Length: 135
Image 1 (cartoon, rainbow, N blue to C red):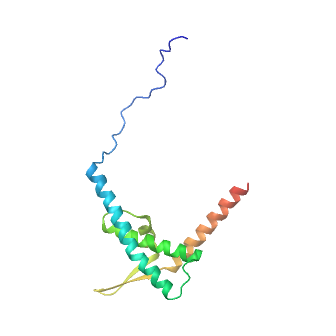
Image 2 (image 1 turned 180 degrees about the vertical axis):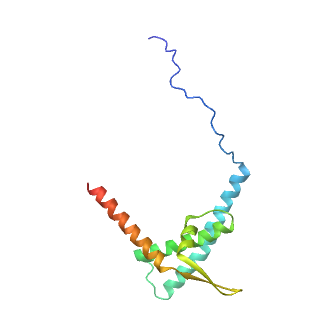
Image 3 (image 1 turned 90 degrees about the vertical axis):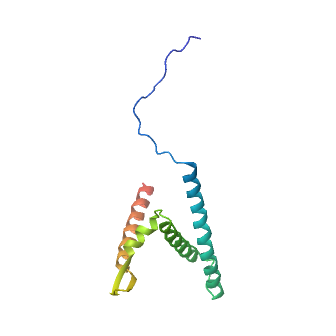
């Protein structure tokens, strides 16, 4: 067998340095995520029990979706509090409008028009995906 002196395909270049994350930063993020999980659970479990005690069907698919959404909203609040981004926060900015009646009175109202447009868009995207899958 002959010696193979080729070095293969080696790409050299000045690569952008990846951001180095210290162990303490990693530990802080880990602790923050555990905190978020704990607080969200401490908020959601009593809520679910309270709803069940008041006769709501908590085993339905619709309930699971809705409570899952609510859980993500709680987590988004905690993410923001700790300085992290959460995708649900961006959605909330579009579907909830703030109104000010007096300097100290601020109210949030649900923008159903935006949600309806979003729903229509998602339905159209689903139909397009289904057509692609059928081809």
